[in-house]
Length: 204
Image (cartoon, rainbow, N blue to C red; front, top):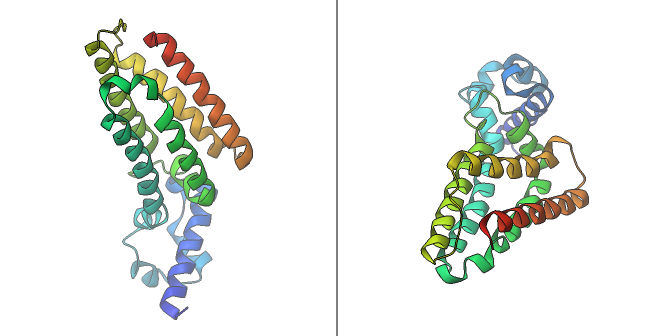
């Protein structure tokens, strides 16, 4: 490792520790520089400020999770409409397993993303996933109706409440520092609960 890499790694390591301890809003750039053992000038040679450092720690992983999530959404939409009802929960279960596995390979970064990102552009990360899921769910309901299924109307706020509850539950595993084996079991049980609930609501 050359000196430039060493300085960058020191800043990233110090930033991660400071953000995990205090959250983005309360984290001190002065303290990050002090922990890293570098000058403020050296810091600004790599990052424009505190948020740029935070982004360097989480952006790659935020994109990775969103890609897994979106691929599952796209795979479901690509299915023939007449078989989508039989696949409800199949693609999402596979993607959730992949997401949980990824999270536990990069747990600190997701702790930052989910629990410590207030004041950054990432603080709505989970909310953005919820919004995408809500739109896909409402589209799925319209598909069912187009097939002549007797599906009750669902207002968007109700759908948002249900979906938000599911995603909040999933990310509790990060907030509570759950062991991976427990997280895998709990997320599977949570999905069983929501699939059964949706089946009841949609009459499937």
